[in-house]
Image (cartoon, rainbow, N blue to C red; front, side):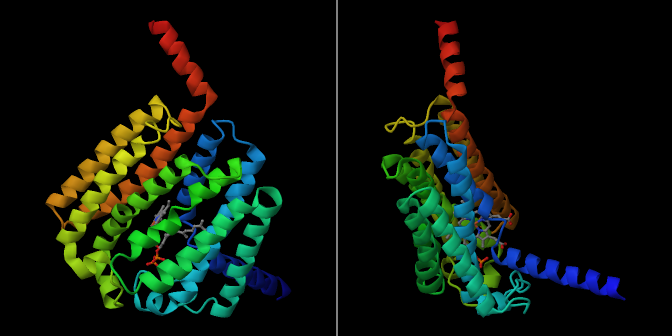
Length: 314
Ligand code: HEM
Ligand SMILES: CC(C)=CCC/C(C)=C/CC/C(C)=C/COP(=O)(O)OP(=O)(O)O
């Protein structure tokens, strides 16, 4: 009897932990961290301090998690109405909003303290501005009021590379702002491709996402223009900034060509949900591989190989 009680209590504890974990929308966080890490690698010219990297990624995780928990509290009404989000911990009644709020605040306080104690004030303030922007500007003011919600709100998701750069250098120069711009311009193709697939969900709860308000053809046309803008922006790290080299440049061209192809296909078939899904998935792979290329390109080893190849050829 006592044994069964212990097993049941352990299951309950696990259930609670799982619910709080789900509140943080954990599947999105790794890509946010990849953009932070790529920025840190470029800022430190491939020789990033591992302790600083570790603390920044933990602090970034906690800040992003806090932002997502606050979003889950604010959006609990529409999350309950939509099939895709109904099983989230608050609408399904597994976590109370007041408890979630305490959790979000604790995550934010720990995140800011880690940045302040081990890194610097600027990176901590930037991480907190990410939470504030996502909550106040995106979730409160824009999400339910304008189809431009994710264009402006996308600035929140573009802050992590600023955090990473500030963590390494203590300030911000042109390069981190270009990284910011890359993610800012990448966000509309990323999100609208998904919004094309789940348009009816958003329409049902009156959230004015672009496909709901302007329809598929207009949305796809806008995805096309943002894709054409983001690709040249990725080249700016090579020229004129010169913070990334040939390896990254080649990857940026190849990935850019694939991005254009996917978007072009969707532009020809704006109502094709499979193509929208394919673009959405590719958008994630695109940013992941672009950031990986930034990291590999920044490593001293890559420069040594490149120099050896040049010497061999000449
Ligand atoms: C305002 C900006 C953004 C909006 C509105 C947005 C919205 C979304 C939504 C609604 C999903 C589906 C999640 C779900 O089914 O629960 C999603 C998935 C995803 N987003 Fe975004 N996103 C934004 C920016 C970003 C940024 C900046 C990143 C990372 C750099 C990112 C990375 C991801 C990833 C990796 C997934 C896939 C998660 C999975 O595997 O299910 N998103 N996004
Ligand atoms: C530096 C720092 C802390 C940055 C945090 C920025 C951040 C949390 C970006 C994530 C953007 C995102 C995935 C939004 C989901 O939209 P939604 O909530 O409208 O999606 P839903 O329809 O699934 O609820």
